[in-house]
Image 1 (tube, rainbow, N blue to C red):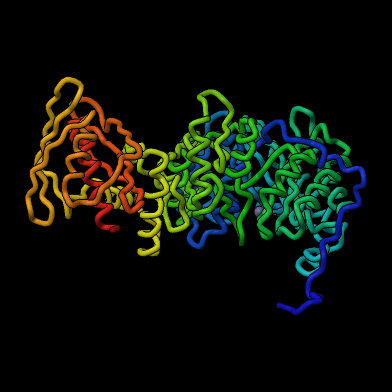
Image 2 (image 1 turned 180 degrees about the vertical axis):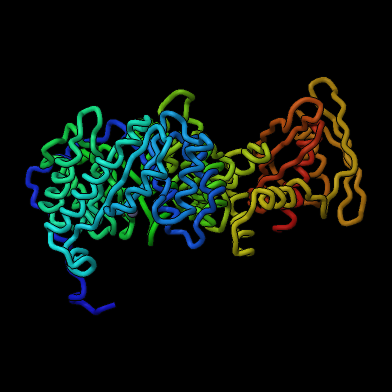
Length: 555
Ligand code: KIV
Ligand code: ZN
């Protein structure tokens, strides 16, 4: 990098718009959506989609609910032309969906594109030419008037040549893009859009689409919003115009730029699923749509099966959805940090069915987009006690008493530290069983029986401690009390019971009881034990033995 001062790059010039309105507005409705996956997205793939893949992808876009789909550049190659023909001839296009074709402002290409559209019910003819000063100077060596002439002549030619198509029943609309709009002088962008509109002569019923692309994203989103508001307020036939956005993501702010430009008055948004597209990509339509949804505005697109959509996308594009991509990424419903896990666990039970979604750290109910809570909490050495308890409860049904969370949390954290990686729920479960439920050494319980006498309980037990069998008996006010008294007569560590909890595990004939016991030894050590058995009494005695074995290990 150049050392400061940075002279190699310049700030992007702001728009002089002192009375801008967009900062004071909020979004209240969804825009019109147009998917450009099959054109802008496809042309950015190392291996463009085959016709079969494009057909599958088209069907996916229809299923999601797109009513405008840019299907390609039919005059550019036979594969693009053939795809458009197959869509029409094989009747893949529902009556309420318009296909859009991109075309440069050249007569031969316009003629070929119209051929590709023969038989379509609704079509959008998308003409574009580059308008920025640098494009005019370096690429086309053309004056402003030349560039306006290219666009207006193309529109006039289209208007004349489309008549047979229209007569045959195709409803054809025009979209015009001053390519590189955001790098074009605003007055010139307005001039060319007005000139194109003059020639096309749109009506309120058949509006012209003026698409104002951020072909390369150079500015901050507020500048983009200013540019769009400026256009929206200067176009003379705003009532006959749909202002369309087409952002790319070079600065990583394509979504923000689109959202602010919607506030600035735009009507329509072009983009791709998961943001595939040239360089850093096109706008990610999924994010903008679901951002609206999480503010209570239905986008009119259905992402209830985001995993299924992602599967088709990854197979057809051979790209992977990044793990952190909003809504769709593998890790976006996963909390690793202990404090986040704790807050999620505490806020989830407050969520009432039918009430606004209010779970901490998770801005959307994963179930709304076909994802599950299961993977929300994964455990590594940064995780806290709440996360471990959550996994044991939600994946394995153990509702540990609150004071036990800290103890098990530390055990699992130490294990994660030792392995140096994230632990799976199965590994956490196995560690819990090893530490508490499968503790049969150095003390193993061989036999336990109680008999009730008046209000007292008498217990008889047989223990093996380091290979030596001990027969014990004592009376107490319950089985645990009797057993603890019996143990007191041995040379095992003395302890008192601090707390006890139990619940059933599973249902019906398979149900078992799980008991948790907290003890404090005569050396001041406080710890838990746990036991499982089909017999609730035996589960609690096993929990005492588990605590005893853990105490012996620590002593
Ligand atoms: O990014 C762009 O400017 C385009 C145009 C063709 C609309 O894709
Ligand atoms: Zn583009």
